[in-house]
Amino acid sequence: MVTWPWQRNRTTARTLKVRSRGDFGDVNRVDFEELAPDVDTFLGQAAYLQLGYFETLSHLIAPTPELSQKESLSLAAGAALLKHRELVAVVRERGDDPTAIMLPFREPLDAYRGATRGARPLETMLSVHVTAGMLDDFYIALSASFGATGDRVAQILRGDDERQALARIITEAIDADAEWRSLLSLWGRRLVGDTLLVARGALRPHTLDAAEEKRVEPVFTDLLAGHSRRMAALGLDA
Image 1 (cartoon, rainbow, N blue to C red):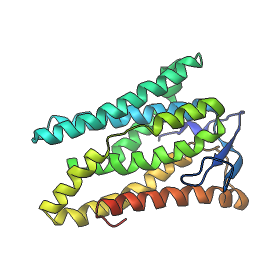
Image 2 (cartoon, rainbow, N blue to C red):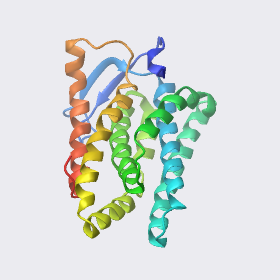
Image 3 (cartoon, rainbow, N blue to C red):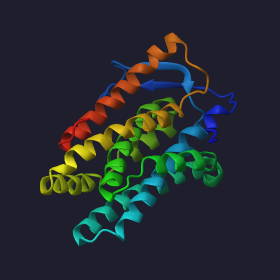
Image 4 (cartoon, rainbow, N blue to C red):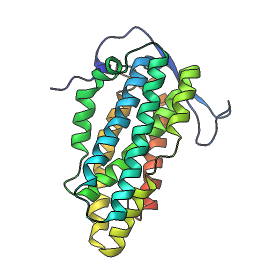
């Protein structure tokens, strides 16, 4: 049985500040007291997720026959690796060992990556496109709790991810064969639950009471709205 790192005891709390989309001032900001994780969890998960995206996309390059698609996959993989390296640099600047910071999340996040890897390359491309989008949104929101370190992480995650290259491959496949539409729509819906669990894993480990659930709800509502927009942009039902 996989034990998530958030299920272990922690003593350090942060304040999670979730901002409305496009608003990075104090307007319409919702604060979550004592629900944000410690900074090691924040950085460790964010860095290892990007490494996982790189690994998943890299594995798709060799079996992809079209040269233009290989190029698209390499661009997206390279962007994920760059973000990983930049997040690792933040860890090192804090005087910590990146391997030690990421290691607690290796097993659960590898299991998550396995659960969201499709049987077909297009499903896996969709997995990376939509789950990375959801989790980037979440960690950007979470970053407001961590001062200058959080600002650095948000800037890194907002960098060019080259995932539109994946979107083009997916939409071209749908245009060429309409049967992909229903299959990928179903697959996209299956990704949501596991991805929300990863986001939940970045919060404090205690069971949320009714008031805390109400404070958390806008975060996950926003993640689901972002997922719906990404799926709609691909011509898929969320």
